[in-house]
Image 1 (tube, helix red, strand yellow):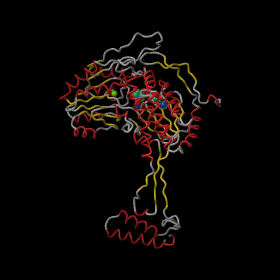
Image 2: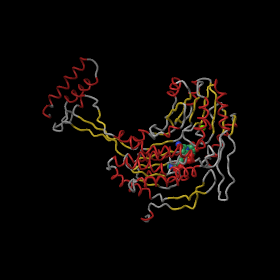
Image 3: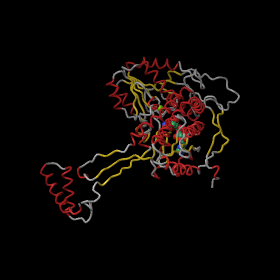
Image 4: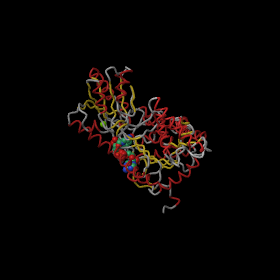
Length: 537
Ligand code: NAI
Ligand code: MG
């Protein structure tokens, strides 16, 4: 038994979280007893039962409070995100804090439209006596497991939509980003959401899956690697718990011969290397039509030569990688490509690191931006997700080749087309196999709460953001009313005889059959049944 007072208090593990861009210690790693999860779910479920009944206008008021809290605490949030991830404060503000501030308000405006009861139009005159109303109701308690690359931007959408749609939430953030998780908890509390409706739990990655799935959650959101997503889905399947998985990508950018080249080169750098390339929807593979290849490449190289990398400050463009495993993985993908004939064309200048302070405990995890020219798509750099600032560029002879190669991956999260011709861009976009296509931009739609986010193929199941997210955190309930409740029986209820069979056959032919003669025959059979059962009316 866990002592009552310690139930929801995490303990210190004695291990530390380090700022990956400076090596400085930032916080002690906390851990809950995994047995607290069922208790948290129970508490959340109790609170949820009350929360669900609260008038929507009051829920909306809290959403506005939450947005205001984010705006007021933006600098603290951006600073904490930067320290945990190694990205810059400006990146944290642009890609996480600002979109999250918009998200609370957005979902509070949008939810009533999506969950509004719908009167369903009858499919056939045969159901003249039915009235059907479709509702969307909360799932119950939603479990959210979020990653370290966007520790605020990713979970806040799911938390906001879940709570505002009437659910309770248990959130686990990546261990590396626990301080950001604590700020999310503070945000929810100080915005005024009911006590116990939201719980933050600190667990090891290896423990959270079972703790959540056996702890009583009704729905699971996971963002992370395809491997872990696959394991979680199998485990959830055994318990029939619905999951929504956002599992990363291997995004292609197609630069057509009529592309705005300067914008394309700058956009490739922004979407490919911001967050030091650790974005699920970041640019990874660039396919460029031959007539503009040389010009594009020289613009891209020029952009990369100007990148300033370093620990968080307003004078650098990008920060460091977040974990040592990422650095090893990116390095090995690059080495493999280079040993198979790919060519390293450009590397960004060395990071602007100040002299290491005496408090530094770990080497900073900088990795330079690299432009790599590559001809074939078979190696791990082109086939796997590359969570680092590596831009792989390849020349293509036709639009067709660009489409084929862009689609030649097991992922399908996002892709982009760069062209000044609307028709060409639309045509190419329609053939790309990805959940999000941007034209003359890339990645940024994650910052727009109205655009669904999620992918085809191994990039995941379900969607976050937009109306689909609201649908994911609610479930359909339909209420079918009988309009003639005084009718003693339906005509096809027992006792059964051959007129019932014939009559139903007649109804089917009348409703769906071909030819006036057969349909009239259908009317005759149906009428026979109705006359025989007239006493039921
Ligand atoms: P991972 O899938 O192991 O970890 C992601 C998060 O899931 C962790 O922060 C942790 O909170 C949680 N986790 C870890 N193991 C778990 C388990 N067994 N059950 C439940 N939750 C678990 O990914 P990792 O090792 O951090 O990164 C590997 C690769 O995954 C990256 O190189 C990248 O390609 C991809 N990735 C994609 C992300 C995205 O935004 N879609 C985010 C993070 C990683
Ligand atoms: Mg890749």
